[in-house]
Length: 88
Image (cartoon, rainbow, N blue to C red; front, side):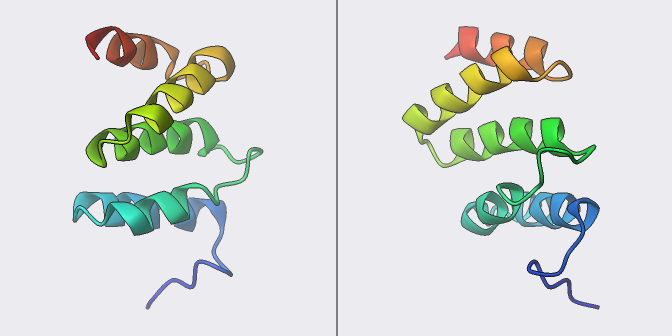
């Protein structure tokens, strides 16, 4: 069964974004990941994967902005964001 992003739960949006990312469809992965609600249990993970999508798309400006957002707002991915930022 296909998932309609306009009617999907945050769980479905997160995993749909992951599916697009796995097949290197970065534009759809980005579009879907951005829809995960900030109150969702997947929000921090979605923010981290947004950074990875920007990295894959070689969008350094958006990547740096996203890493800063994670470092200042997310607890779960702060260490990974700092590490990636140092490696760039």
